[in-house]
Image 1 (cartoon, rainbow, N blue to C red):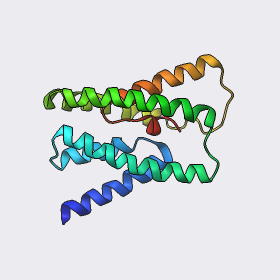
Image 2: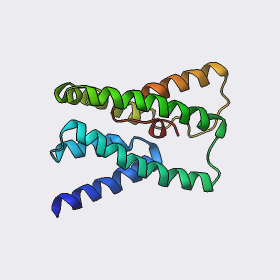
Image 3: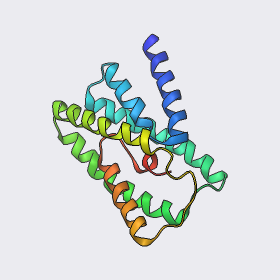
Length: 154
């Protein structure tokens, strides 16, 4: 029962933080590993949780008119393709290497989230080069075993 309570609390906290700033998996994935789930199961379980989070938060953003379709559609297409490639890579990597890669990605992504979390507060015009760079970065975030475009792009 204590384990379920912990998982529930982590889910609530990570979803709340994710809805505000993105990066749901930065909290939930390490928590699942700390609970003792093997890396592959933690990543798969986390992905399903992120799916629920994404559906819930996307529906709210949709109803409130807070989606820029010009960006959302290409990012969604990229997310499907890059996410599929990332999932294939995760399934085929050994647990020890996956745990190492997860650690490296978390060490890189957490400071980025902290230092650049205020980006996007004010809407600024973008040019083609900046949009293309954003799409490339979003694609790579989909390839990582614990991140997704929905979490990386506000």
